[in-house]
Length: 172
Image 1 (cartoon, rainbow, N blue to C red):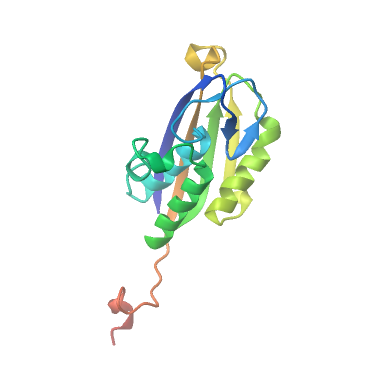
Image 2: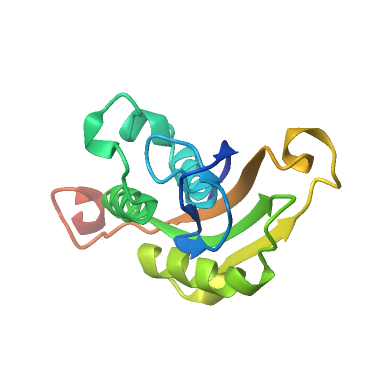
């Protein structure tokens, strides 16, 4: 088993959609970033990549690459899922927290968890998303941005049916 931790933060700005956990949330501001700036999915990606020892989201999807300009973060999460599968890691569970003074997240959390679970090919019960305010402290508390943290647990599940990859499983 391996555990990974992820964090992301973006500033709130006028003129952008607010997308968190793959859900578009009605609000007068959105998150600034190279992609859709989905802080929750970015934190989840970092937690998963970190647990697998594969670096971070910036290594695989750099903000200097025009291919990721305006990218849908759910597509990036699906790419991370493929990377994990290639390395024979299975997602046991994810626990994530959104930190935002506004807007309120509670009504959107079930859809966020469902999106993450769907993109990873796991049951929604293995993804926990919660939201907290910053109690009006700091930049997030003043409504200047939104952050997210995530923790992921991976389990190594090798496919020992391939004698080229696991010859010891076929030794007499």
